[in-house]
View 1 (spheres, rainbow, N blue to C red):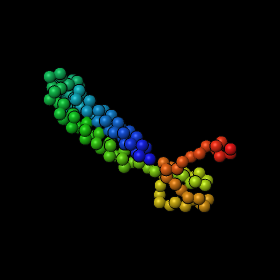
View 2 (tube, rainbow, N blue to C red):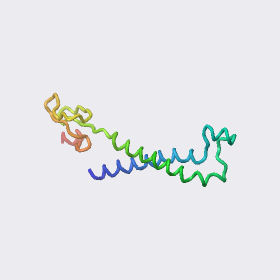
View 3 (cartoon, rainbow, N blue to C red):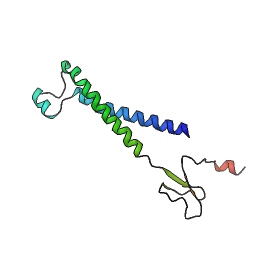
Length: 118
């Protein structure tokens, strides 16, 4: 189970890094709105890149952190009935209408049917 948690966490970290880069890189290299009108171009001149870098890093890190936290909260657990195999989102009710019990899908071990018949 710990391996699954580690994999999900590393996936969230990768998404957060990508989201931060998607935010920071355009901020670093392109002007917007009033700045573009002032400079008559959307591309930042080379002599201003270094001065924009600290704020681009801060903006990207903030957006990446927000993405990481949102992905952490949006984790929905799926449950499956061990008797009839019905599925649902976790809602606190563990009894199924068929008389079985719902279990967390990440914790259930599935055995293929061809192994059961032997």
